[in-house]
Image (cartoon, rainbow, N blue to C red; front, side, top):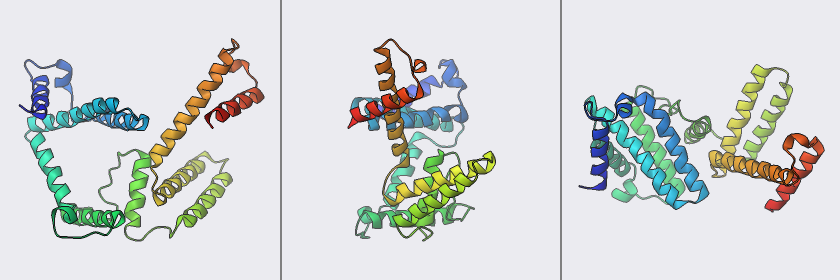
Length: 258
C-alpha cells in the first residue's frame, strides 16, 4: 500500500457511516471549504517563514483537504481521488506541449502567453461563459482575483504599456480618493480602485501583492511589539505613552531593522 492509498483508506474509514468519526461524517463540501482555504494560507505562511518542516506538515494538511473533498464526491458517485489526479495530469500535459510535444517556446514569458491561450481555448470549448474573464472564481480572495483579472485582460492587450502608465493611474486614483473623503460609499469605491491599480503595479513588476501585504503586516507587528517591549521594560503600557512618545518609539523600532 502506498502512502497516498493509506491516506485515502483513512479518510474512507473516518467517513464510514457506521464506524466513522461523527464529526467527519457530518461534514459537507460547504463546511470543509473554509478549512481548505485556511490550509492553503498556512502553506503560504510556512513558505514565507522559510520553515521547511512546517511546510511538510502544512502540505500534508492541504493534501488531506483534497482527499476529503474527493471522498465526499465518491460517496455521491461524482468522481474519485484517482479522477482528480488523472485530470490534473492530462491538463499539465495538454498545457505544456513544449515539454510533452513538439512545440517550442523561447522563454518563460512566451510560455505564460501560451498557457493563457490554451486556457482560453479550453474555456471556449467547455463553458457557456465565453468572456475572456470567464472562469475566474468569484470566491477567490480579492487580491488574488484582482491579479487574475488583470493578467487575463492583459493577455488580450488591455493593459498599460509600461509601469509609468500604472503609476499615472495610481496618482489619478489617489486624487479621486482624496476628493471623496466625506462620502463613505464613494470613498469605498475609490479605495477599491486604488487597491486594484496597486495589484496591477505588482503584476507589471512580477511581484505578488499578497506576499507584499503579508510582509507589511509582519513588519508592522514586529515594530509594534518592539514598542510594547520598550515600554514594558519601564513597567509601562502603550496606553501610558503620549502620541509623540509613541512616534519616537516607532522610529526607534524602525531603525533597529536597518
